[in-house]
Length: 264
Image 1 (cartoon, rainbow, N blue to C red):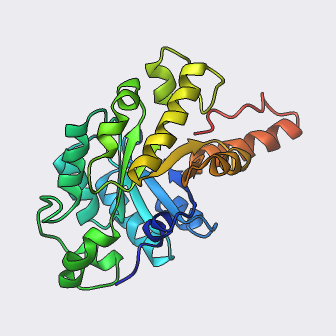
Image 2 (cartoon, rainbow, N blue to C red; image 1 turned 45 degrees about the vertical axis):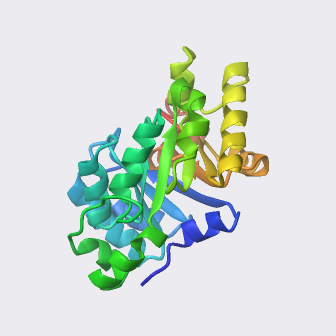
Image 3 (cartoon, one colour; image 1 turned 60 degrees about the vertical axis):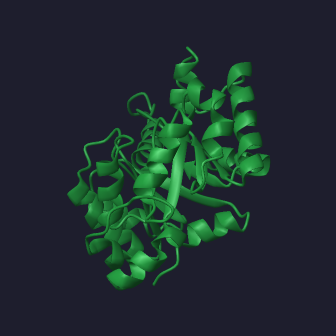
């Protein structure tokens, strides 16, 4: 059975860097899997990607030596179960704002005795290059469980949330976090409430032995966040990187505004 090297690196205290797949395209997944990131997260919360396309991309990414992750549309048994049963090596769950919500994630993502994930499927074993029996036996040691802290309620409840056994990563979603503070969505800001929230998540993650993660727009921001103590860092996305480079080229040729539609 293949090993989830992302989870292993995080458990060893190392940093792991990946990116996001927003485009509903297996070609994009194929190309992004050649870049060198540790992992890629298929985005289903804010994109038109289907579970069928996601499953195809899980096979592409795992076949190219990468950890395929999925941000599920919402915190539900159905979403988490389908993501893992169709081949994801981990789930990123949005808007986890309380301990009961964190416990629900772990229950859906871990087999007994750690959780209540139901047994079934075959694609999960295929992406780990193993048998279903070996998968059921070892999945709890390989599946990555990531909870998103992207609301002021999650910051307030971080101590309780991160005390939940079975969590690997707490991942800051800076755009939604800013928005919940009544601020314009942004990857970063100097607003005291945002800075305090970031520091608090780092502190609580360290207290509970959970890796801290965050989304950033570029390599320089990733390096800075890693120096701060973040281990699980997402850099931009396929769409953001494409638009950023295309805008740069267009601007250099005097075409259009040269402004990318989005960095995320």
